[in-house]
Length: 217
Ligand SMILES: [Zn+2]
Image (tube, rainbow, N blue to C red; front, side, top):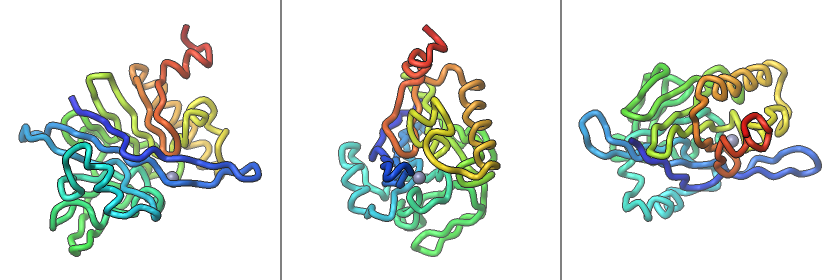
C-alpha cells in the first residue's frame, strides 16, 4: 500500500463574488515500486510563489529532499501546479507525467511520453478527468491502508465543488459539462473512495459529505 501526505494545502479566496486562485495543493506519495524499493512521487509541483527551498522544507519531516523524487504527475498544466517541475529529482530529473507529451527539466533532459490511464506504479493509478483546463486533465488514485484516496487537482477546488460542481468558478459551458461528467464518474465508479485531496482546499472525507447531503446515513 502507498502513503499519501499533503505537503502544502492549496487555498482559494473570494473577492467581490469571484474566486482568486491562491497556491495549489502539493501532495507526496510514497510507494513501493515494481523493484520493491520505496520511492516517492509528487502530484503537482508548486506554484509561482514557491521555491525549491520551500519544497525541501516540506519534505524534511519525511527525511528526503527534492532529489529523491522519482516522478511528478501533473493534474493539469496551469502555472500554479507546475512551477518547480524543472528543478526536482536527481541530475536527470524526475520523470514527468502530465497532459502534454513533452516536458523538459533544467538539465535539458526531455520526456516524450504521455502514459495512458491505469497503474503507473503499484497502488498509484492515473485517471483521465477532463474539464478544468482541457481534455488532458488527470486525477491520481492511490491505494492506502486507509482506503482509496483521490488526488483530483482542480477538477474540484474544494469540498464545495464536490457537493456542487458549479459552485466555485465561472467556466465555459463545454468545460462545465466535462467537469460535471468527470466528477460524477469519480463519485459513481469509485464508491469506496475514502478521501479526496482537492486542488485548492483541505482534504475531505467523502462519507462525511455524503452524510451531509443525506445521500447516506
Ligand atoms: Zn489551480
